[in-house]
Length: 204
Image (cartoon, rainbow, N blue to C red):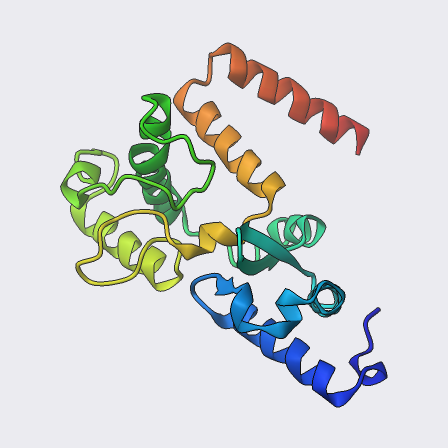
């Protein structure tokens, strides 16, 4: 447990400034802007403060940091169905990820594991899907943009938004596996994923 009262005022101020920025900024924050991120010992205090609320510190790139839910906490939230997406929103998000990330990666045009390194997709392409109406897709896109799951802006190109940077490595891997199961459910990789997941659940 991290008790900030045990530290001098200037350290408390630096730590809370970094925590506030990391938790509220749409984009990752620069390490150069916060002493509490530049200094290794202070960064550990930042991690401790975040952990008190079920959060963890995530290195996005060299010199960039953000935060996300700890994996165990995320599991609890998921089981409680807190903050989950509506079925239509999940379907539209899956379409976006397929066109923006999965297909470009499969074609070798994208090699980065970063979900925000993606190709934009036109909403007309999304509307080729016949299971959702154009109005349903537009409404879902607006909701996903409002939550930062997709890039914001009325004329913004449709692509994954900054919330994807808040995924831990385990969450990011699980999401990619979900796309594999969706795209090629009968493939060898999908079968391997299902076996491993079943084994993990049995051992829990």
